[in-house]
Image 1: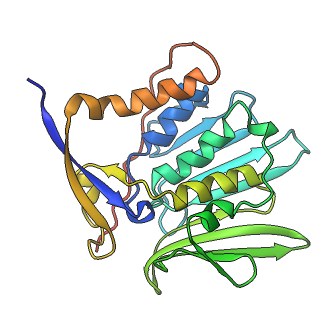
Image 2 (image 1 turned 60 degrees about the vertical axis):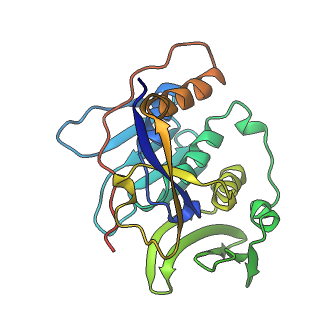
Length: 250
């Protein structure tokens, strides 16, 4: 007899809480071949791309971003950086890392990273800024010497930010566009009962759905298999150990 487990379907996804970090880290390691170090005395994960140019660091740090994604094209080549607070939904971060590790990453050109937001009915604010229809997510673009960096903030109230994401001016636009696409996606995301603790119920739509425990357990392995199939038929490796996801108390 199949065991049934309740899962929450939450929208908007940008207020769904962080979710499981393995959605990003295990997928990079087992699905895209990124290597990871082993430091059992530190609550962190460091993953490096096969070409040693890109690195993802997940490290719980008080009042600082937990996620850091960086790239250096050789010793003296271009450098770009992006960071995400610990409460950023993993689906948004995964959109960036999936785009980075995609087989057509270097071939894709994006002129307007904001296009997914406009198609979803988001508002333009100021010069290069944007706002979600409910007003809970705001984006700002900062111009320095002809280059633009982006800061995106999700807030429950004006003075109560939930998370921030930041892309420096050298971040490839295809990655910024991938984040925007995931940000505007109306599809609800799934969370376990424990992962809904601390969420603001007055700001989200939450519906419970019964699913088999087997199908829930298969979600991450199936994601890894899909990512791995983009590059080769090599069986995916075991995922690295992970620090716990942050909980936002309300």
